[in-house]
Length: 382
Ligand code: Q9C
Ligand code: ZN
Image (cartoon, helix red, strand yellow):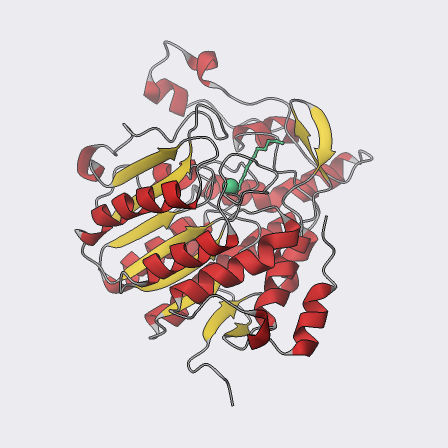
C-alpha cells in the first residue's frame, strides 16, 4: 500500500542513454559536456526512492505530433544526420557544425529571398543550416533519444489529459532551445512545445507554458510567437549575460494575434530564492488572467546556486517553495524536464520541486526508507 495516494507519475525510459556527448566547447576550448545521461539517471533514482512517486514507461506517439510544431526538414535532417556521417567513412563519433547561417550573411536581402535559399547537401552545411550552436553534438543514438524525449512529453500529457492532477516527464535531451526549424542548446525537438500543441489540439483550450530553466526558451518563444492560444512565460538569466544571448528580453511580447502572449522576466546576476520567488509571483499574476485548465512547466535546475552554469543562486528549499506556488495555482500540471547540471543536487532538487507542486512537505530524510537512503548515497558527488 502506497504511503501517498495518488502518487505522482514520473515518465521515464533509459532510451535517452544513446545520446551521450562527452565534450562541448567553451569559447572554442573542449570542456566536459554538461548534458550527460547521468542527469536523468540521478533524477530517476531520487524519485524512485520516494514513495510519493511512481515511475512509468512512455508510449510511442509517431511523427505527427512533432510535425505539428517542427519543420519537416528538421525531422528529416536529424533522422539522416548520423547515417550521412557513416557514409562519409570519416573516423569520428560525433557531428558538430562549424558554419552557421547567421544574420549578417543575409543583410539587405528580402525575407522571401532568404527563405528561398536552398538547404546544402553536404552534411557539414546541413548541420549548420538546422543548428544554432555547437553545444549539441549528434551521436549515433541522438535521434532515437530525442524521439523518446518527445514520447516522454506526450505520455506525460496523456496522463494529465486522462485525469491526473500533475505528471512529470523526465525528458532528456531537453527541448526549449529548439525552434520550429532549428536545434540548439542541447535540444533537438521542443518537447514542451509539442506537448502544448497536443493539448490545444485535443482540448481546444488555451494552454500556458511556464519556463523556469535558467536559460530563455528561445525555441518555445519562436514557435508560439504569433499565437494567442499558447501563452509563453519565462524567468531566466538576462540574455545580455547568458546563452541564448540574442532573445529573452522583456520587450519580446509576441506579434500579430500573439501580441501579449509572450512574457520574459530576465533576472539579475546571482538572484536568490527571495528575488526569484517575487518575480515568479509577478509572472503567475499574468497567468491568473489566462483561460485554460492545463499548465506546461519547462523545469530546469540550472538556476541552482552551485550549478556549473553559475548565473542564478536558488536553493533546494527554494525549489520546494517554487513547486508549491505553481501547484497552488490549481491548474493541472504537465511538468517537463529541461536543464540542470549539478549532478550532486539534481535528484534532491527535482524531488523538492515536485513534492512542493504535489502539496507535499519538503522531504525529510526520515520519510525515506533507510535502504533507499543508502542507494541514493551511492550517487557520485562531483
Ligand atoms: N559550452 C539547457 O539548459 N551553451 N540548455 C553552452 C558551450 C549552451 C543550455 C556553451 C547552453 C544550453 C536546456
Ligand atoms: Zn538551461
